[in-house]
Length: 358
Image (cartoon, rainbow, N blue to C red):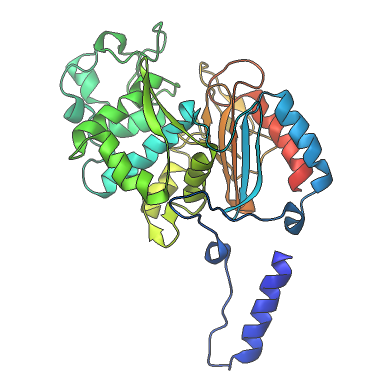
């Protein structure tokens, strides 16, 4: 239906224009919807009008319920095409993003660089001070902010607790940029870097430059060594929509496209399926949290190749699919077993989704 509408609009402009006048062609970005910054108003679109196989939606819901889902939301070009809550949850409940929230931090680092408060090539020591690790001065000084964003800081991941960021926990294993390992401590320390780099600290900067600009609700909560973002499912979808639109909210470019592109493409060759704290589909190989070996093939074979994702422990999912103009949110307990980042559930979920979307 959308295709027929666009063709009709194009024909109208062709028919009414002279040979000296340009022909107007509508693009998906020009028709993309953005919800108001406050309130509960959010336009919807009927899945039937999108050409979905609506007879399979019941199977999708059965699958979601059977796999412990508590919130599931699909945006198509910004409008809500599907939204469901289970196990007594609702659109007003807050959920932890777990490591899907790494994408928020990556975006905020880009904003800080954009405003001149830091540079990805800066030494982490410049912001955390000498002695933030148990490494030698030379080893410590070699770690850059970019290494923290790409899981290539070179810390000894055989330490018992890779969430611990106390100096005694951060010991040397390899030169930065030579090994990829999903080491949470170095990521977590990006927020103290932002705390030191920005005028009023990390949370104020995040609030003023990102949260209020797109209408996020939620808050950061300290849980042991981790700082976890909690929000509604709709707020996660808002952030997904911002990234579907390449860092632009409505008519305002919040994050420059140069950083956004770098953030959402392969950041190093050690793990082609990892950008700046974003997971990337469609690459030739991938590494997983807790493992050192590479696996051949795509991260999520059943998903579109251009999918980018924030993937948190226990199956917190934020999928962004530019080729289909989709943002998909899944929140709730682990579907199968508790695990970090990507899990087999990603591929199973996309197998079911394809029966609806294709």
